Length: 207
Image 1: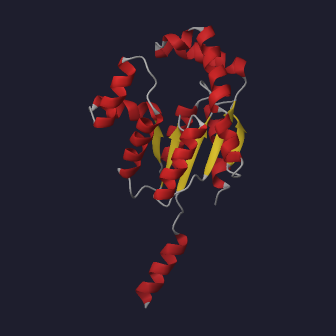
Image 2: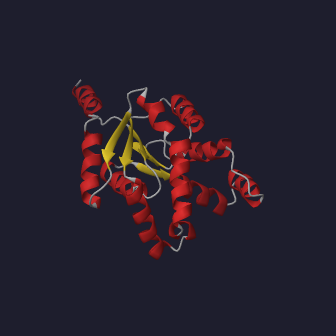
Image 3: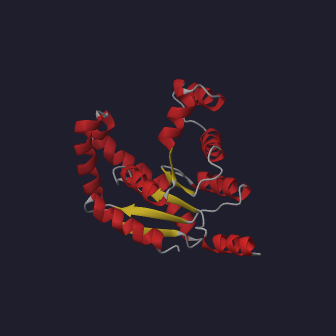
């Protein structure tokens, strides 16, 4: 009887799974903040770039398929990206939760994510968008180019086109989850710690 009471107490106190989407345009600081949040809340950080590097670097079946499309200069189909994501989720069955950085980028990917989560009895807890003005994004990315070595960070025309593509193709994802009352926007300008504090406030409001 005593052991049963302990089990019930533990069950009630058990922290629910948190599944976050960290959202924002190029240069908004998603990667930096996602890593900090993953550490604080014991979440598995999943970025699209890391998924591709792992699958392609290890020549997995999905990685080899992705290479075929990239070699032809074509976009990698959503089905491959979604498959990589599902593989990553399967590797962490006991995770306290996940934080997605760079995915989903389209409504189709959002719907696919919801289907994967439904199969696993999971759900998106919240989408948090980092709100940063375009001029600030341009300044950040041009500054990042000095250390990143990325040509697309140094060319202002390319930067502004990336931001334009984000607004046209990716920002509708915010509305998709907003219709489910899951989207929240925070000020993405300030020190890394200031922004981190705002993110934590938003996440802590889930409990």
